[in-house]
Length: 431
View 1: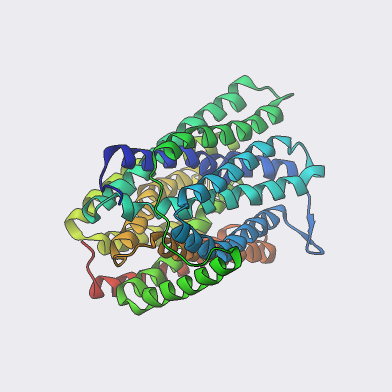
View 2: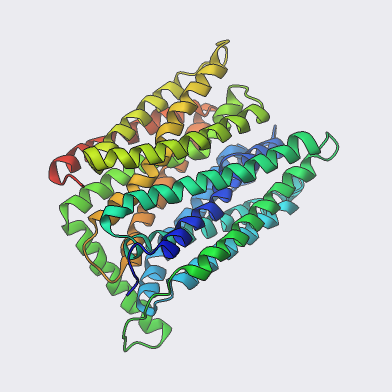
């Protein structure tokens, strides 16, 4: 049995956010999308037998990675619970993702677009796959009264770590590089991101507890997979028979569609209104700093008014931000400052909503010796949300040629999530 609230263990757990968030910021949100957009600018890509916008192909490739995870996560999670090798799975996905980041260094031009998209899919699977097992540690290592704080601590460390690697990348691209070698230094940032992720993750891997294997009569892999399917069905039954969990997961799915899609399209929104890469990166850097403050503030607020009410407030701010994005007009001389104001609003709630979602789910879970299987459903819904969001986003880009209409669609998803949260607040006020 793992000791709850052990400082060494909780520190090691939170530090994995420091390690992997470099991918989330550099590869998912800023430098890689900007580099991808510059390499593919003015071209249409052949995908699925059609000529598509590069931004849409980018979205579809990520969608594929999430679909793969949707099928893999519940089975691997159940196996991890039964064999007690959750840490091994976490190491595998983190290693795969970080090596794929390093491989993006070789994406030199449009002729290597297949390599680029393949590695991006692998990096995405590695990042989000490792989070399934990482998040499942939370109820095992922290008592319920400490889970909000620890979850916020993890996200705060993640934002801080990713800021450092982004600053290093910005210095390399803006000050060390010149026009003749800027592409090389940009790709060097992808290599550094993978090294950062894999290197710092070793601290967490060395100190996180190894789970105990369950007694099982099934030794063959096929028998274990069958047993895992039964375990997944049992867990699903528990989840959807518990009203508070049922309603929370409904809310989480719908507002995750909006939140995760806005994260993915943020760079393209800035590019659409004419914001240059330097300003966009600095804006996102400031947004990360604000997210640290927001995560801590919402964690403290939850102790006073409860998790469900904090989630309601955060989602309402997101709805306002989405509507404001849709109303941006690139011909307006003040559009740049409007974008900064929206980014400030998003920064205040993005870290808090992510952090509070994770800890709220953890606190709602029944006592269980299969936390990884339970958290796999949380992660599956998040991945399905991203699939729905990226599909909506990509289809709207193809239909309209613009990114902004997607923001209005995301406001609709947030609004449905808000309705679920209002119901959750009535059913079960989470302490």
